[in-house]
Amino acid sequence: MVTVQQKGLIDRLFEVIKEKFSEIELISITESPEDPDDVWVNVTIPEGEEREMELVEFASEKATDILLDYGYHISIMPTMPIQTLEAV
Image (cartoon, rainbow, N blue to C red; front, top):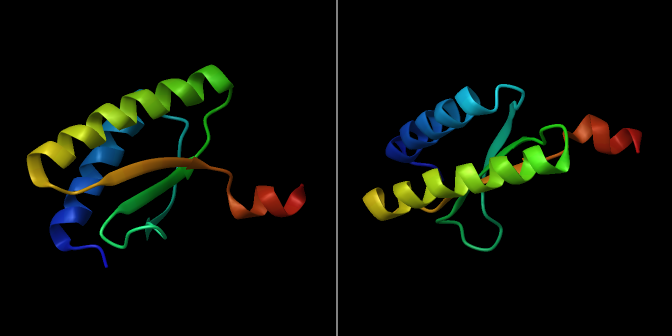
């Protein structure tokens, strides 16, 4: 379960990432299947592999700051939306 503090950090993290990667959209926020204390923020994949790598690197830096400052492990997970997967 995501706490109120985690939700606030996730909202701020997504806002910062969205400023740099305006094309991404939030898909969902879920607990990691590997560890329920970890949170995955699922976002749409930006266009182009290079842009996706930039997103992963940028988001990882910001998420590491949250981990060090607050002790919460939050991962940004670029993912295809379900309707796109169904069309494949």
